[in-house]
Length: 209
Ligand code: ADP
Ligand code: MG
Ligand code: MG
Image (cartoon, rainbow, N blue to C red; front, side):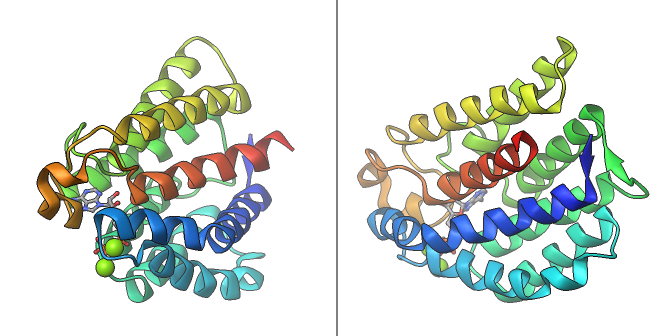
């Protein structure tokens, strides 16, 4: 079971990972975009961090909704609406839940991914966060179907996400600013895929501890 307290910890850990890797995310975006991904994400998650004390007595769905609204209103760029949509779908997927079973977690992860795909229209192989989120959801689903609990299934999902992230390096970008570079986008790791990997790794870290 993933508890409301762990959801808050997850957001806290993700915000701090973003803060500590702000330069790395921005450098990745400097290579194939406009050098602001770390700045964008840090701006949004700094705002979210300031709201953390108010999350203590909120339910899981409301917490996700608040994160979504905060990101949409403060991040900008492509990643703002995309992460905003991810958290909005996470909010809908967890409506009325006091804690999350592995099936609830699957629904959350799947809904978030579906939202990103509907909003951004990226397909697998387009060199975006979808190339990280999608294999993670698939691996999580398979692990749950094999009878694994949330922690084990998330370990498998994070490995799949990491592999998906590595696989963005040789890809040619077909969506977002990196797509303007054409062939020159090849050979660089996707910045949004990197932050998506951090998001899943942060969740694993919290549920493992
Ligand atoms: P911007 O490109 O507007 O400056 P960011 O730098 O914050 O926004 O985010 C860039 C990241 O957003 C990319 O690395 C990619 O992972 C993701 N991204 C861009 N466009 C899309 C899309 N259409 N679908 C999914 N992800 C996308
Ligand atoms: Mg950018
Ligand atoms: Mg930008």
